[in-house]
Length: 638
Image (cartoon, rainbow, N blue to C red; front, side, top):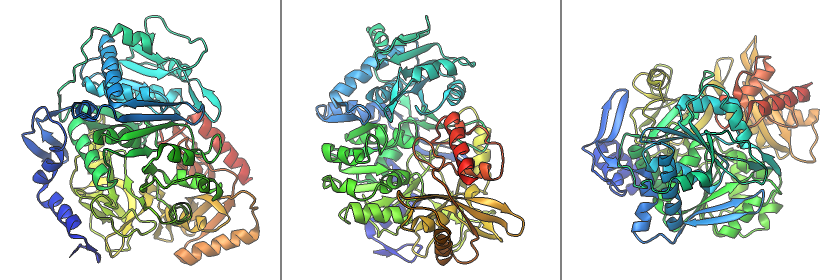
């Protein structure tokens, strides 16, 4: 054991990896990359001319090949690649690696038949079904660039993303299903394409029985496209390591979404490494990430990451609590899932239904549960770790971003698991030279809130923003001198454990003291009557800001002045008397379809500001749904 910069002594293998990643960078990442297939070895591991960088320079590879062909050639073709379940209809499907390769080659031929060439963009607007993954893998197979758009977005958000990508082809389905209702995706596509775009062809996978409106010369059914592709080449493109694999749009501070990009080389190496070091992923895993392919987690750890390992990856179409709150637990038992990736909002959504639902199921197959997306509040961690799983397997929080491609801060379970501290994402992972600094880039001492930054690039970091490199340099590399700026607020303790407080623009400044909204929310949620809470800063003439808390109670619990006082005392007892809190009891919190609380929307409501175009917020639902949620919030505050 050897001591880290903090007060804790790290196990020897972990310390060696942390040191080598920063002090012998080229050899360190070469050893990881060599575990994947390359058609041509790289000439140089890292070429960094601040702020721009390239990894595995002049190497040739293909992420789709590494996900499928490699396993088939090594004799693992009969293993299940994709296990699909639809919680809405009860339907299931399984595709082996052999079958997946056949379908990916078939659709690669279809894309080439539609005129898609290397470097062309293909937009994918589909539900969580195997064809969505097939479309992604076929696109990267031929060296084209996919741009997946979350199936919950409305026509404006879809149209903006399709236009920004300059997509030649758009792939969709006629319909998806949500809470027993049919979502007509093709209608959204038709509306979105009424605005200017470069789309020449629309491919529609037909799932339902209704007659479809099809535009002559533009629209074609999936089966027709694959038939027309017969005779086209299915060969895999030998892509340069720094050729783009995909564009994924995420929210920014302006109305225009940012097109974060990832490349074939560095991205696959990074998500493979982090899959091994954080999740201990193995080829015999039944892996389930409950995320949607419309987000980076869906790209990295529903599709590409698990398939790089040869896992069986579970794709689930549905929500955590429909048709009833046991649906996720039943999926785990039925498929013998052994590694589960979910979001804290998913955990809290199930937690509010009580302890009886998970008790009905055999969850002994689980070996690890990991959470990310928001901070895993200690009460939610304790419920999952102790009440549901009886301390039998670890529940681990970790942190990453769309821009990072994979985990940045986490518990290195696959190397040496460290003690879990509820509320902490644990430590910066190998290759992440992280720090917490003030506005001028000066390192801050333990227990001091500041900007979470990285002092060097890593293979999963986005190298630019699609068609807007100037914005990339300004937003990420110019805010703090000589650092990659994440936009996240954090502090670390004496052991080097990192605690995230939310985005820097979500930190509340009360009488000059910075308080993270997550800290206040965690204190409120620790009350046994509270199901969930959201906290935002509210302008105050005397103190600058106060904390405005919006609290949803558990079923059967009623608001009262006494309960309000209990919550105020709880927050002050946890965080001190400087936290001035206003408590508002509400029936609902405005959320996205993936469960994230829309704090910026709440702040707009309480400050009487225009809602703006919230369709561009990451993990967002349609603008219409958000406006409806905001109106309900306004009513509940009257």
